[in-house]
Image 1 (cartoon, helix red, strand yellow):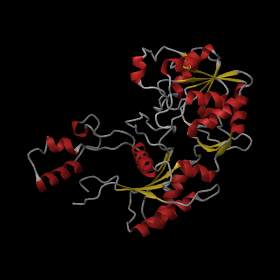
Image 2: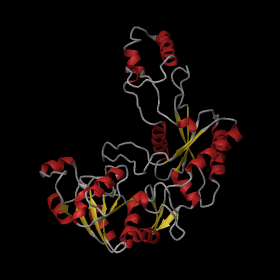
Image 3: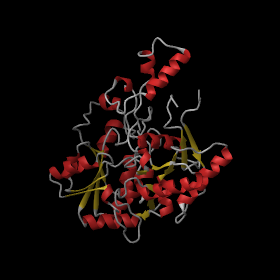
Length: 390
């Protein structure tokens, strides 16, 4: 029996700067790691590169002033409502600073008890205890404080109501119905990520005059800024106290060039992808992580689709219940080799994970690389496409 299953390795890399050839650097790091680590690269290995270093190599940055100019061009002197931003200094503080600088007056509407990705002010137990209806009740910041008192974030200790209020020099209200903002202004920026299209449609149907989502800000360069034609400022991170690093552009070109370079050097067909936030939920804080618009903005052809797996536990407890030892192992291998090409709605696959392969791999890569000082923006995943029969 081959005792090794999926292996995820963090690959260290030098500090990437604008203009660096990331294809060459990544290939160097992976090949050198293989030689130094005493392992061989194989067909169907996966090399995943974090979006952060790709964007940095592209110089895909924007300043607060450049964000402000784009917002000002879109809204003029109108009072603007900013609704449903996530609660994050890293993800949103500089965007907020730019938006506030680009409008005459700003009203921020926060969702509660948490933002879209699970950062919370208060718990659902507190909502129930205070007899608050989150579907209909609307609060000013002072009213919210009066009811709930301390609303600092569980992990960061930040009071985001006060933090955003001061940073935007604005009024803050709390509500979950997007149309509530229309009582203050008909001009809106909806800052939600994964529900942005639905929110925008609701606002326009309710009489909003203009609605702009974050993926429509900085879709082209403003005064030499970076930009992203597909995602705008979505997926951006704080870079300095006056700028953000945007989600990378041309990621598909990068992964295809990287695959060719790795094949030239190793003779192996290695799959490549760019990854951002994984999609997994923290059981204590309730945060489910995915603040990027997608987990993987680009990947090579071999990573398309979903897993087509049978549940070993189901077979062991049912079809193979009377077998043990080598006989059970061989029967299991045969069952895997003869499985149907499409196991959707088949009891044999019940309990497997029917998600996109790239979302699963991005989550694995994100957990492996971490978000701090590990220094491994490149992840090598091996044996992912092997199963018990191989």
